[in-house]
Amino acid sequence: MSDHKINNTSEYWKEMDFDVSAYTINWDTEKAKRYLEENEADFICQYVLLANKYGILLPHNIKVSDCLREDVLHLIRTDQTIYTEDWAIFRINKLYAHNKKLLYHSHIYTQRDSIIQLEEIVNADLLITYHDVVCNNDDSTYAEPVTLLFFKNYFYITFEADTFFEVLSNRNANFGVDNSETAYLNTPRFNSFLRDFIILCFEYGATDFDFEKLGYENFSEQGILFGNEVVYYEDIYDLLPEKHKYKAFEEIQVVLDETHYKRYLEDKKETK
Image (cartoon, rainbow, N blue to C red):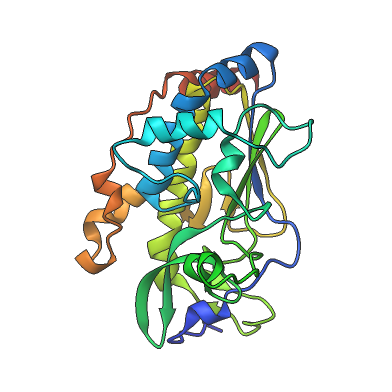
């Protein structure tokens, strides 16, 4: 049976029922951790640009501006951490702090009544937006499309909702809903963000990368599958109609050094 095409696919997005695949980037040595902490401001500046370039995991407390570095330094100097002593000095989590919790939102293309539009989604299950949370004090901040956490010496990226999936099969969509129209606009952006984020981490001393495949078959080490392959945003950007192009992709430039990540991949091949 073919998957059902409907005109409001976003209303069928659902919170994950169990743990899904996750990506972990590690700093396993004291030297690596020290390098990251000593270059904290530079890393965070690059990260903020990267998140805004793709509209994925947008920081809550710092925006892109001509004063970005000054804002990052101010964040570091005035940090009143909400975490226990076990947390590292590194403060990227502070970018997402909101009301003593972590607020994750991404620019996600939704489809309602056949209309595709870009929204700042916090809760993909209830389609709650960043505006709903910040301005209307809605506290339903679960079911985020994607989340990121830094703990002690590693980043952990995982998913709380099935927003990026090409086909939906959950309690809301038990007949298989075709989500490809919005996934085509969202998933390649995530894949490019993930790839560039990993490169950025290795540029700042990361020593290892781990992919944990759980639950769903449409994940790979390189990202989320679309049409049985990993598609990156640069592969499709020029093919998109103007109204569906995420303009920050071409407006924000992020210079990345792939040297350390490529060396890591080569060393990994040699040890297999």
